[in-house]
Length: 161
Image (tube, rainbow, N blue to C red; front, side, top):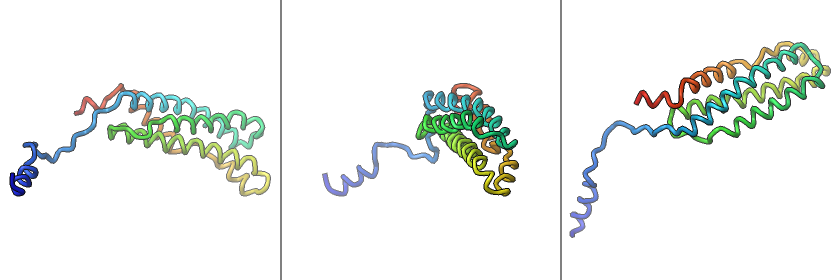
């Protein structure tokens, strides 16, 4: 076989047809289940975190608040570590990212609020900042929405394809 013939047969390929459509990977049930479990627990824990933040805002005693707030911070970080590192399906990956950011935000907000409370006696500005703590914010809304989407069913996006 000549060099040109080999090149032509290589270029011609196996008769495969190229299309512009991108094949979407099939969703992995295990990823979706792990996301749903993490989101469900996060929604429950964020209610407890909001209660702790309310006590901080009212300048409660850190000795009574920290035993409840510390484990919440650790659990938010732990839930974040339990998330899949990547999800094959784009919808699941988007939800994974929302959960990752939301859990990280919740842990940091709670931790920083307790730190502010611990040091509020050093400055009137810190005491004022503690009094202005409002809650978990947009991250809580995003986690609620992600959980609502995950709770719809095992694989709602597979029905659209």
